[in-house]
Length: 412
Figure 1 (cartoon, helix red, strand yellow):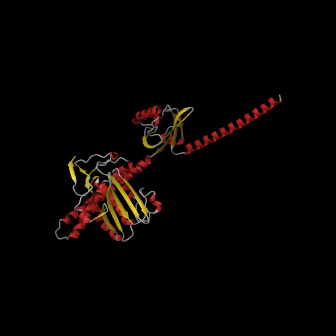
Figure 2 (cartoon, helix red, strand yellow):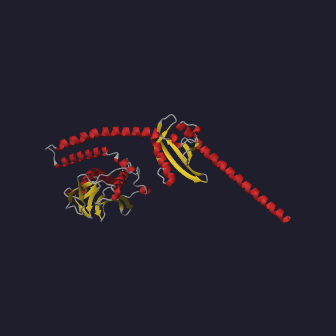
Figure 3 (cartoon, rainbow, N blue to C red):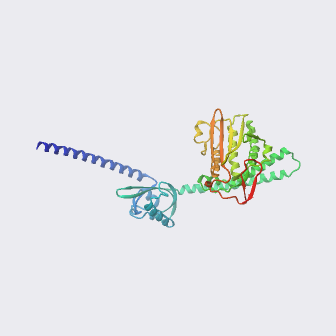
């Protein structure tokens, strides 16, 4: 009898302990629910949950203000806030996910359109998530109204369009007057060279303005490269002419090499090294990198551009005796990264990386106190890598030559 009493007391103590634990768990759940309600109800974004049938389970105040529906929408299909033209695609995607678990917009941030109670369609940014419990599968959506953002973007695009238009007009005049001056007979060779450089730079700037949207497309991964054969030494010669104005301010010398053998600027004008790609983009990328190298170089030093090659690629090594600061080495090719350069935007190296990547190539650097800085641009030889999704040249193709002589063209 005594033993039974002891066992009963132990069982009672265990029940009391379990009851206390259950109360603590219930309190924790209530606190968590209160925190969740506090966060969602004070959020200016719409926070919505739905079940696996696509019906709305929760609807916060942000959703009420954004869409115009009150709590009466709970239990209604989520398609109530999706514009009619998008509903079929939503239902197909919803059904596909339930069958295959294939995620396309789940766990991503996407821009779509939403539908208000009054019928207005407006732009939204949607973050969608999903989870499962013993009660089934559920979906959560955080929705942000981006109407104002889109207005700002449109204004910015309009301003950029007007600026491009206003910049192009004087450039046309500069190039035109330079062309007229080149026809004059009373100018010497040095003057002719500088006038030609003015004409070339103004035409290049005009092309840059026309193609200002290309870098944005590269950033988004939507740019379609149109490669054609071009002479790399022609770009080197152009860079040499440009560097005379940039490098002269610091007494920096520019030297060119092919397989460690020096190349004279006058010699390059008569030589050819045929590669494939978009000539203008490669030229702008290399000009940016060389300009940065000159600006980073100590006064009176040499900046070298060396052309190397292996079985699958050709390599352009741009070397200067400066050192990249420690604080920017990990983000050297990121946009707006600059250090100690007055007036620098930090966009030159980033745009160069975009161009090289669009060509299926790679770009990197080494830097040290003893060796200075080498920026290495690696681009594929012909035939071009399939990963670039390049379209063949429209008119002709060129067979890559490891030597500047014997360029072979054949009709494409």
